[in-house]
Length: 82
Figure 1 (cartoon, rainbow, N blue to C red):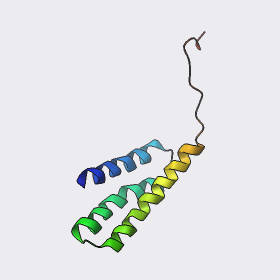
Figure 2 (cartoon, rainbow, N blue to C red):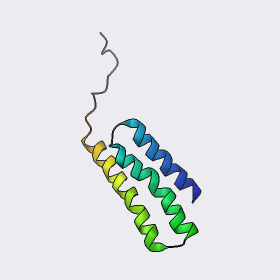
Figure 3 (cartoon, rainbow, N blue to C red):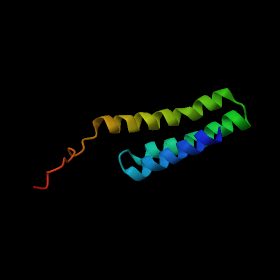
């Protein structure tokens, strides 16, 4: 359980640093997993655990939309410098 909490926090930090999504989406992802851990492992409250997953879903939806709509420069191929 601790691994996916730490991993999702790290993913939220990467979202924050990338600048691809709004900071609120990254923050929602960062805080959701520690809330999930407390709700599921410490309190064993299923309703609170469901509410804790909400910000994670919102953050993931935001990054998904950003990736779908993001326009990047075309890839360079060998010989483009000539």
